[in-house]
Amino acid sequence: MKERRPKPIKSFQKSDSAIQITISCLLPVATKMGKKQHQKDKLYLTTTEWKNSYGGYKGDRSTGEGSRFRRLPFYCCSLSMQPFENPLCTKEGVIFDLMNIVPFLKKYGISPITGEKITAKQLIKLNFCKNSAGKFHCPVTFKIFNENTHITAIRTSGNVFAYEAIERLNIKPKFFRDLLTDEEFTRSDIITIQDPTNLDKFNISSFHHIKHGLKVGDEDEEIAKKNPRYHLKALNAETAEALDELDRQYKPAEKKEEQKRVADSLNAAHYSTGTVSASFTSTAVEPATSHEAAIINEDILRYERVKKKGYVKFLTNMGDLNLELYCHQVPRTCHNFIKLCASGYYTGTVFHRSIRNFIIQGGDPEGTGMGGQSIWGEPFSDELKPNLKHSGRGVLSMANSGPNTNKSQFFFTYRSANHLDGKHAVFGKVVGGLDTIDKMEKVETDKKDRPKEEIKIEDVVIYVNPYDEADEMLQQERDDVKQKVIDEREEQRKKDLRRKPAGSDKPLAFRSGVGKYINPSTLKRPAESTVSEDGAKKSKVTGVQFGNFSSW
Image (tube, rainbow, N blue to C red):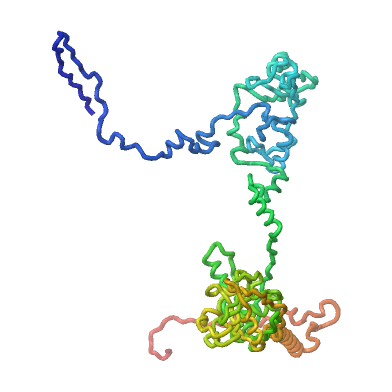
């Protein structure tokens, strides 16, 4: 860009003086002013501004800008960064504390500084001397050690001296004996603890255990960390009380190991599990090379053999209720109801909801209408049959909170409720004790339809349980199949024995003595023919002669 020269401002004269003032612009115009001069200004902090000018993240301290030199004092352990009490050092002069380095070596077996393999036997015990003020000093020169002192140690004795004393009294006179114990050593036994001109080994940022986050925690601390409360720093009174209540009431769920079901002639499906095709098309599935038949749910086999109704009796404080269950039509719903009755689930429960001319509801052990659990531990689907309707008094049906949410709650109808058809599964009816239903309906209720007088199920009696009979039938069929297989094997064994002649197990003896079982005919060579086929007389081949076709 060509620089423009400034033009001088025209001079002017003051009317009342003869002084002429000329003003010129002496500074060149090097930049373009006006348009787009603030186009790079942002209305927010950029990443670079936040990182460099403010409190943003400066990057990993082990690399880049954050890996600047951070010096460790010579009197501190290179592992815990705390002043040592029982100092040990390596051959490179790196100092550790006994209580810190031994657990680290047991766990990792490497040097915390370099990452190389090292054992506890390779460490050297150091003997530091202190003055009356409790500061480390040289026992020969009595100079106090500081960050600028050249400190050395003798490998054989472990005594620590200032390098000045070692140089003057050992190296220069070539007198290699310990200045305190008079032990003999070599020059290679001199270990540099601190050299002010070379402080690389004191750079905390370069330590191997800092870069890789290697730590050795206390055993008690590791056990305490398993408790979730270890990570809670401060708790108010309400939170602490809630946690204490949780500790008193909480019971961990019991883990039950499910036994692997084996397919048999009854529960084996006509299709496979699909593991072969899945392992062929997906690397995440364990390879499988043989097809296995899928196993049909045991409930399906059981329900196929249920052909009759079930009968149950409720003993309440208002009277008895005899119930007929349509097990052959809605087997899953009736199975859930009968099994809950057999386990005593309904014993002691109350009817928590009663609406005159409509229904009375129960089956909740909590008595609130919000509880209950099925025998499978989860809600099960509706079994809606078009021929089973809420028509008449004493119809037994499942209570739910929506489609396929059946658990344990049920209700009896006081009168027909056709609007419930297709929404609630009818699975039985009252066949004896309608007068008890009348008594229940007459009990007064509060604003929430809860009976003011307790209506309680005191006991449950099961008269007919078709599911037990179906289980016995299944077991009998399995036993018959097993017995049939055993009989077939025995019959096959007998057939094989009848086909095989007696004594056929023994080999045929041709003579007595050694080699009696060898057939003599196999030992003789076959006689050679007197005239070989090759030796047969060959016809003489005559030359080609022209003539008639009589030889053809």
